[in-house]
Image 1 (cartoon, rainbow, N blue to C red):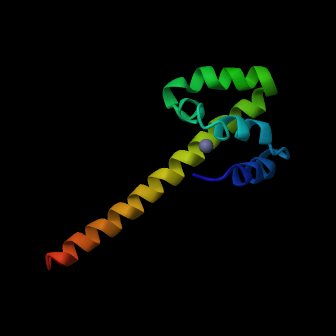
Image 2 (cartoon, helix red, strand yellow):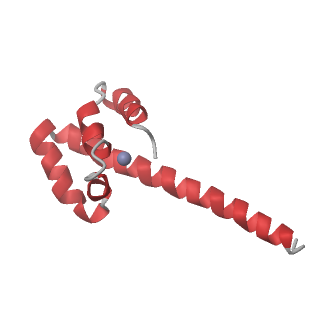
Length: 94
Ligand SMILES: [Zn+2]
């Protein structure tokens, strides 16, 4: 998943503000990180961020999750393709 610095850079490019406090809130506390990325808690977490830092910050929170999901899925797809190619080659298939 992208580092906080990359999320900040992307927010800055989109909005003119880095929203570092939002991205740190999501990623920095290891004891809360999983629940703050939990899609089932998205509405409550977005409401919290909106109350703390405003509507645009809440939108940046949603985009943070989008970017994390995209990065994770891309990594899984790449690893799957690599593993499948290795397995097929190992057994002389293809
Ligand atoms: Zn994250």
